Image 1 (cartoon, one colour):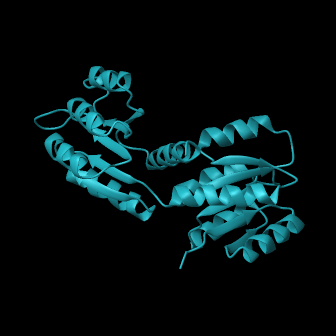
Image 2 (tube, helix red, strand yellow):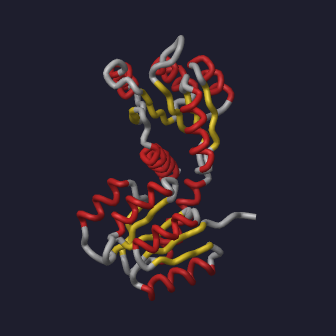
Image 3 (spheres, one colour):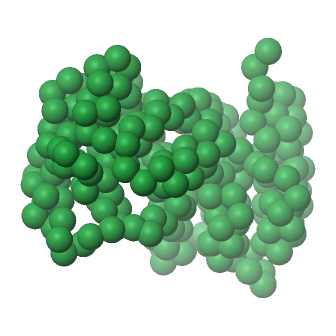
Length: 250
């Protein structure tokens, strides 16, 4: 049996909330309502939501400020902003902070349902390979990513990572630049030959020392570089971004 998404609707327009509530409930989703940013934050503290539809312009606390607080509690939650106004500054800020999409009122219900289906595809997760010689980092990242619905493998050295990449087709590679024996760049270039479609995110705690290797990796199509200590919200945002692009390309 398919498990339907748990959705939170956040809007000070109570009539619109009720309309969305009944439409989504009829489609089989679990739905909750909050009529303010503060109420939304309290609900998020009590239970996890897969998707939040949030009005961008609300009294007391706008949608962007609410989202900034929510993503600290539930960074894996996908947030879609709604607006009936021309609020370009807030829209730009929301997208910069990592919201999934902006939809405009009056809402097109078919578009709302289509957006939910796209998010559900992302929520099915990815095959991710983490390569880091620090066991603590590997375990921490794996626990967070598995909780977000991803399937995760861990390698502590370049040779081990290459062997794993030969046995399974991973979608995303997180790789530390400073590894024993062969470094992260050398490992990445071999894995890229094995699986040209893999999306690679470089990691390092040594910004200056590893700069040359990082730049060479980026010049060889690595997606981006994250510097330690890792921002976990940024990491999850990147994964969603990668999966969104992959699904749009299908």
